[in-house]
Image (cartoon, rainbow, N blue to C red; front, side):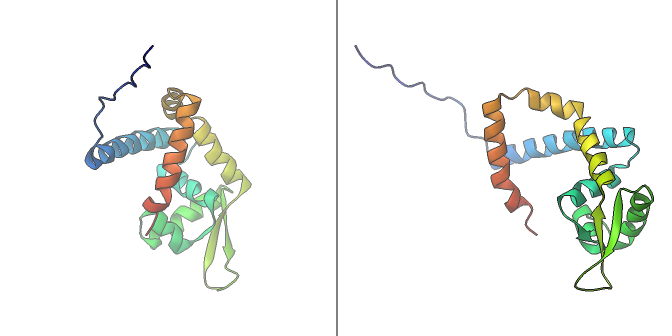
Length: 151
């Protein structure tokens, strides 16, 4: 009795350009879902993005501007509006009293969590993956993230 031959793969390896195109399309679709849901929660897309950044770690105003890819002068008004709603607070830096660090409050953490929980289009896309595929995707994204986040 002969052993079965292993199946051959006919799939071609995607080029980097094809992978970048998929990243771009998925990123754009994710951001549209994120912005639409944020609006239903009374947040602009930039306010929601700021909260998403700040729940990972508190940042000085300048650092938040860099993460949002905007001018530091725009961040003052943004943080003012988030602070009025109790979603963030400013703290004086322990190392330099001139620097204000922006911190997400528990209310802010709950708000961004609610936005992510309500992102049905994104959830439906992820539901297409099996648990094993989700593990693999998570491992791949975790490997890529530090390189893509380098400045």
